[in-house]
Length: 453
Image (cartoon, rainbow, N blue to C red; front, side, top):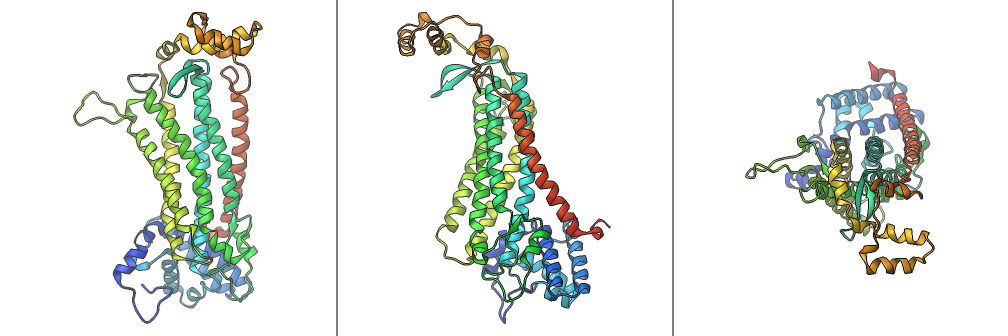
């Protein structure tokens, strides 16, 4: 297979495998996006007179065929192809001849891969947002159902104050909503078209970068050609950072479940069909999925740091180091999406052991509550605190659910704000849905009616 950079020599096999081995596997996920970018680029080239209308029409037809072939598994990128860009150009040149050779006019693989990854990121952020909303709704439903089921609240791994299953579940819902706000910011940052920046310095042609940005559904052009290239690591890191926050929320959930489902706690029970067994201990039912999620969170953190280390000291311009960011970047996206979907199953399967939870709310966790009862009677807080710290005999006997309901300030056990959380879900979901619908409509228009045939 001829390389786009072919010279009068061949790259030795070992060097090719070293540079491009992992890349071609990942590039099979980018075929559609490379074809989309090429359709937009070809339409722009036709507008400025580089391509005739007939050449554009046959190129578009060929690129639509590529999308269908890739979807059915009949077109794949292999090591001999070097990358997705080479594969597509060689395919078009073989099928169409001269027009295939013209497609690369005014662009470089540098801006091609940036477009591919930005479109890939955009579509996957939509999927991650939807999975996040589904999980948030699951946590809210769980919190409503068990809103006033008592549960010890822990500080320093010791029982501290009365809490509830509702508060515990709602904490993850709010955390994920905050994580989605970070995803929103990175989505906006990512929503810039680098197409036309070429190798990093533009080209002496009247490229209409605004047109290609519009055709591909980007909010704007990423203006400076050099920055378009040097931003590659930054945009990856911004998205990875937001997704890492999601994974950290899920990891805390996983750790809590691993602790609270032990025989020593027994606060919750998980469906056994989500548990594995032991090859030697017949009684074991292991919540391996949460252990793996916990480990993958550490992996995601490591991948984020790896990308930061790769790009931190690079000079201006394109450097092949950027290519090494693709694998960890795409893996973090995939890991986050799969983890969210898994946690949806887990939340649906959790059963609180209510009697155990109530029994775990032993008298000492009501000490602070007793302090505030004395404060209500007029005793200064510090005096009330000292009174209770000197003798447990002053701890009152309380109805456990009533204690939860008496804490009525915003965010307390008696006022979790579940209605407000649901409203926040609706508002955030509407924003993401608008972005997704607008993008889908734009891409559908780019593909045209012939794509449906």
